[in-house]
Length: 344
Image 1 (cartoon, rainbow, N blue to C red):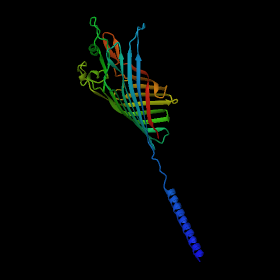
Image 2: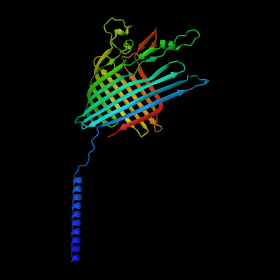
Image 3: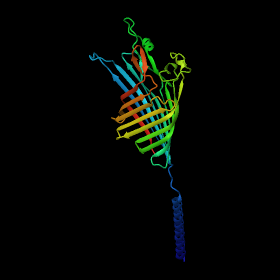
Image 4: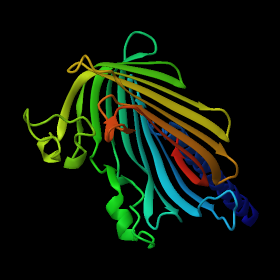
């Protein structure tokens, strides 16, 4: 009898364990089924693509008993090129700011000179049309610089003494400054982008103006007299602002040949409806970058401006006469470059 009770107890224990095992298996299956029903986490789309390129450039020349002549000099400059691009459905946007500033010290002039100074803000927005590669566009441009730039004339001889720092400062001629000039333009038109590396923006409705905050520079940059007959020798007799309304054409091209070589160019032409007899204002900017090491690159930049209202050339004929002409600036630099970017 004792053996029978022992067998019954053993059977009951096995049945209980089997039920517990079934219950655990059922709970595990239920948990697994619930886990499968949980939706996968979907990453939110990113509509912005940002990048920042910074550079610091240094140059130096040293001469000692150099028969051909020349002057010891040192240059230092820095720059920022930041982009913020947007794309969502039919809306696209491209925003860019370029900041450049640099100094030059040469042994022939006991003063620190500015050789690089630029602020350029550009914002383009487009909404795609039914026509392929074509979009309605709004384009904003703003250009000026950080501080004053001068043309350093050689001071007149003063006996046997070398010109002092103050003599050089007194002989210099102011050429430009912050908001002197400053160009602002807002244009409405169409944007054509047949290739990723090419875009053409035509804005037949472009309005804005030119600001010249420094009175002595207003005549140089084509400002009009406040009233007819006022003395042109007094810069305060000229207006600080000139309104413009016209058409603007802008062409942008950019190639990244490989990981070490890149080239970009921009051509802009503006025709003012308010002064139909005056030629268009044109600019052409070029940038070439060649990476020679991880954080070092060779950079070549050129800037050309033709503005028929700006007096830039001195003609020595019965005195000094200012005249219009082609403005050109070029920089060839080797320096430290660091880039940060975020992609979709």
